[in-house]
Image (cartoon, rainbow, N blue to C red; front, side):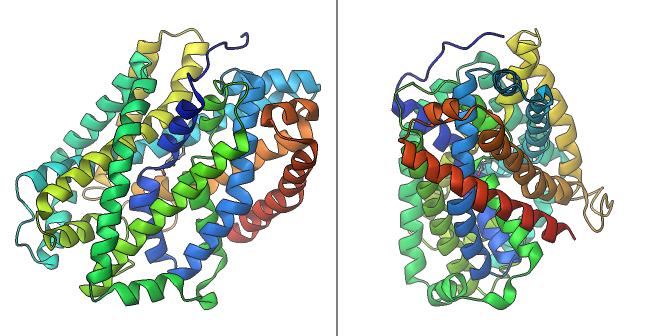
Length: 446
Ligand code: PHE
């Protein structure tokens, strides 16, 4: 396949697409509950360290490979491997990425479906005058109702795949451009509200007082996985976006601003959610339901709460929509490269992901006690192993390819940085990021 000539129409368009991929359930849903389950401040600190020392340099590597290859992930890797005269087997990394996003999207769609349900529920006043306990019970009842869950999961898959099929992701990025500042605004309002609650002090202490005793290898592994997940790194999905990056744009600057924004959004939702947890005596380790129980409680105490809540879910949906488009795109473009029509590829991928997603839906009812590995049912499995294991492994291999395999002058050119900065980046990836990822993976798995 020859080089793509397509480019994002502006530098802004590229930053928006990457921000759209990065900011999503990872920040607002997954970050708080993972923090809750993994010892609070210990997890937060590790997550920030991993974003800066590992996520950022590896994100640069991944986008750079796409930009240097100017093709879909598999072809880009094959082309660069050819240029460098190294094994063509590197292209299978693209397939590994596609498998990773396949499983991630299958549960991502189910959870995004919960937001659709909660949007409708808040518009119909379902949370008015409810106690936290009632809100919790209602969430459990929803989870135990497969038809409702399937309906929302189906709707979300249709939303995602229709955009991917039409190849109009760019249009959605523009929508994102308008809507995301509003989401940040609502999060700020929530943060302000959190400040007035009795649990604010406890939440801040819990998030920011160092707690080294809580650090175990499994916490470290989860924090590393989350850094990859939230930045959307390690699945070759950003590599696909890098292929369209304009020639003259500075890659490090773009990536740096996305990472800072990503941390800021996660921190704000964490502060808001844990203030509610501690002011109402809820359990920080509640798990995946954490956001869906705490936010209705928080908003019901704000004036005009139901409207704020509805607006919040609309914006969250847009945020998850742009992430799910990024999740689906590598699989679809791979099939398009293999000769399928775009529409057909989207239907095929959509149907398969939807089908596997049903196993996640049923993990909250019929299949709750069917354990696949250890104590994990299907939802627990796909929402932890692909994000926390496959993404770091993928990111690690991409980084190895970028600094040890592909032609270095090409790498420098695609990064678009001066020689001293390039050397610094390569040193960081070779001697900090890669060893760190290897140590955490090996120790975390033993
Ligand atoms: N970063 C997205 C989020 O935080 C999830 C994602 C992971 C998207 C991997 C693309 C690739 O919601």
